[in-house]
Length: 356
Ligand code: ADP
Ligand code: MG
Image (cartoon, rainbow, N blue to C red; front, side, top):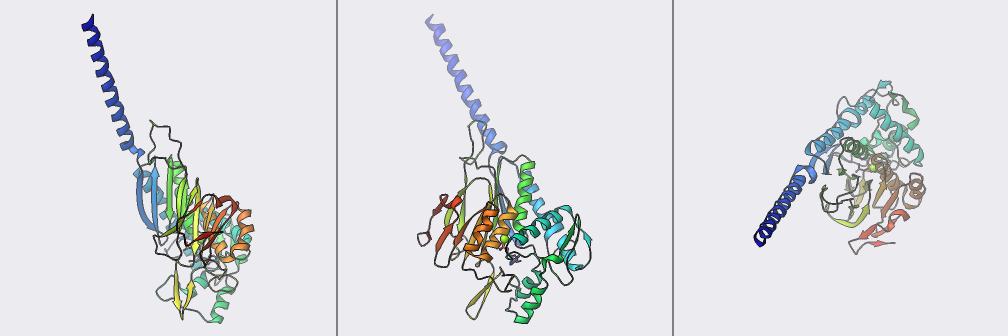
């Protein structure tokens, strides 16, 4: 009797051991089989592109990058010959057929321009070119040149009729203020279509988070992993590129930053940066060094960050409210202000900055 019970116990332990080994193999297979994060980098729209996927594959990330490049090269690029915006600018005054995507983005952009209290103007191309801040030869133009360039920035000259569009003669369209956000949107749409569970997409100063991040870095069938909020660092406008002064916890959202430290040149001790007031034709001087906007669309967060930077703190508040967006404003004395919906999610990491 004793012998047979010993044998049964031995059999049981062997079975339990085998079960544990099998389970471990399955978990390892689960992690190896795509549950681990995938990281890819590239460049588009003159900016760096970084993609991290959780519960997605290398092929998914490649498809997202291709979608961004296609949006740039076929639709929005002002420099790639044959893109819709390139053709519209080359043929100013003539009606052209454009892709549905470009028409959609142009239509939304024009609506936001109209609501921005003259802060966002996608017809500022001539002025942007005149200053050449993004080129090797930036310069402070003469008053008369600025006046002439501003005269071409009449938004009512951009006519959209379904997939047909026309811009005014002498006009140049520049979607630099919204393109990177629109690129995040198209990558996020692609990720969702492909069934990616969670993704972080960054194109220059715009980031979109899809879904929630897995708590321990992987989605696994064996743990009840509901996902946690993302954490995004806000760049220190006074420090080196990699430096952040605060972090913000957020769910799925798009985040864009506009600042006077991104692209600029200095002459006679004055800094001339790349975000212009469509009223004065000079780099906007609204008392901010940077503004970071959180919204549920990439295009919107990008457009709004430029708008808020031009309008300044007080005038931005009603615009943000209208679009249900939140923002973090940084002032030259390192004070920081944030809208009510986001204030509690901010952690200041650099004690030189004060959240007021
Ligand atoms: P970044 O391009 O660095 O992400 P923004 O999103 O704020 O920053 O966009 C700035 C770009 O938008 C400029 O480089 C220029 O091409 C264009 N731009 C500058 N000022 C305006 C404006 N007031 N309205 C529309 N576009 C602008
Ligand atoms: Mg912008």
